[in-house]
Length: 396
Image 1 (cartoon, rainbow, N blue to C red):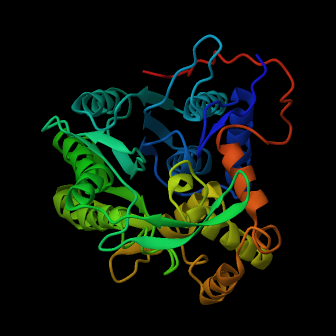
Image 2: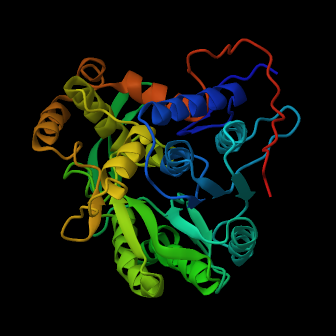
């Protein structure tokens, strides 16, 4: 079938297998171009099929030559219907790992469930013995707690008062004012239950109990802080409360990992175009202005550049891992530079539908968004007939 992008809001309903494959090839080529990392040998990535989790798996495998197990929850293809992009990403990753002689296996299922944790641990024990690094990078809007059976849904809301500011429809380029009503206490609790650190702790407890962690094991989760422009809807909103919980959980996990001399870290990453971030009001406008500014300074990074720098310059530099006063790794350092944020704030005051094409990088935002689904990549013939029925080699 010939596959074209079909949009509904901030979601693309189709994905292109050849485009997703090219996206993986591009990321692998970037990591290989930077040389070998003296890093981990056995890596588990929970949330391994898109965004920062996918980049973490690529850098581990093709930068450090690590054996990797990836856990994700993706939709398989059916006749006449494409898979989710993460399915095609994972299929391409597995194929390239096999060509490179690297161990790589994947598990497709609900990472929040006890069943998937059990299945993953059995695979680790059978094939790898123990894990050196656990990357926790889930970005689901819904979680069913396996202990209580309660299903929680996260929300994107401010806390305390209605938030009003500008946002952009990145499909049309139209800048409008948006108002978001404040969260209820139940909204906050549900968002923490989905996006906080409880499931990360459950994973690490299960791995520790099964004796599946190496001496000096490291675990890493990803977070975001951002500027004052976005804090009402992000860091001081419901998501921010969940990220506070995630970051506090890192200290609890480090305490529990003392028996293997292990440590847990939260890496604060840059604002990037992901399926999750595209759903957050205000963020697309901020990112389009940020991209313009960082590209002009020559310091723009996508997911693979961010995670490659994280591994090379922070985790495996040969020096102690640098952290801020809250024990967080700050790989958002370039985004948060004073000159960058001052310029973005200046542009924000000027941003409207007419000025944005000149002062922002909405084209870059839209291109990155389409790339997530395998569209708009060079060296892909989008007019050609393509087989949507792609299998994932190494899927358990």
